[in-house]
Image (cartoon, rainbow, N blue to C red):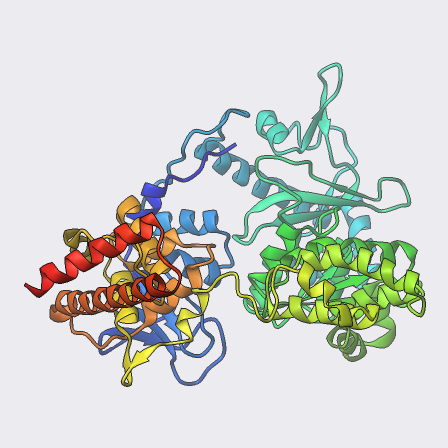
Length: 589
């Protein structure tokens, strides 16, 4: 198992790589004033609204809101997870990614070994493809594919092949140690090695970076198992990969929606009809990791299941990962096919337009979810409505805090007729009157003094954009006890992060907040234009900080004096008041 990537390496990488050079290598940039601009790669537009700030090492699109540092750009542009993006960024900088040693599980896979395995998988796929074209057995498999309507071009796009019905077709041609590591050989109890895939049409499974990580194989007759997949290996993790994703991205890097079907042949058959946005889970139910992967590529996922009992059960099993993955801006639909149909047979019978129409008008998750319970339970009875609450609420609790979650609970209250008691609302973690993250809205609600940005907002924004300003705060030796102002908790949190991590620039500071409650606020502050020239940053920050602290001390002092007159102060508050009065008198002199 690979160790974690050291935080110090990630910080250093963000300092070494100029985000302008990185993005310009993918999207041509043009310098305009202090920024570089381009048409946004994340949505369609005619006028450039995508801006890259070299000083902050930060990008932002004023059209769609995409934003972040160099790592965020690679994650969004190339549909990578965090580790993959760091690896790609390191490759751009010509660096090797180090790993921290963690709890021992098995010897760490060396990079050269992985390269050898990837090379082997390419060679094996080429061998299978050749067998499909030239061998007598392969020609039978090719005829089977033709009978299923798969053209030669489509077979080429998906690199389809054929595994000879031999025990050692691979074992006698390739390195056996690597074949074992790749899961292509099986070792019997007596130590004999033989091919895992024999007499099967072969479906290479490629990851987002076009690397073959595993194979699926299908028999030509009715023998079992009908489908056989590669086992878990250092390359292949079926819970994290989906079939057809690489091919989908080759056709459209930003599809409007992704259709999740049940099998390899479903993906290929739909592609044959020009429907190039289907993928399939690999012999397992779709997991949250699968959905998170696909949601990085499209905001709408459509589950497609057969209409029989097994299909309906599979659709309901998808609810758990579905609810955990839904955030604002994401949508899931459920498409149950007519009885005795799969995607291949239905698209042939109805035609492409009607099939696509079914996809576009498939039930939303909310409709399917509550419709399922309406059919299962008698909601005209109190007992049925009580069961509805007991069965539905655990799913709704999995939803991330969002407007959608509130609306789902509102619908549950409506169906259960329990809304008058307001009991359901009290059992959720978010209500319309309650915001668990009070500083997340700082990007939207901009407190101003006389039409100008508030001192707090200017100070915090300049600190985010210039982390070295924390030294000016340290020089003041501020006693924060009793001081409160809008954004105080966030300001102190940023200071603590800077003290602990010592970020060199905004991009590195932003990385410290990835996937935290404060991330949205930090991005908003990084974008804020306080209209301060570089040579005046320290002076404006110092002035804003002084005015902010003066206002906070006056507010705290007034609050303590008033409380002393009405309620009285405890010993700690009296001591705080004494210090404030002393400081005030000292300042007056």
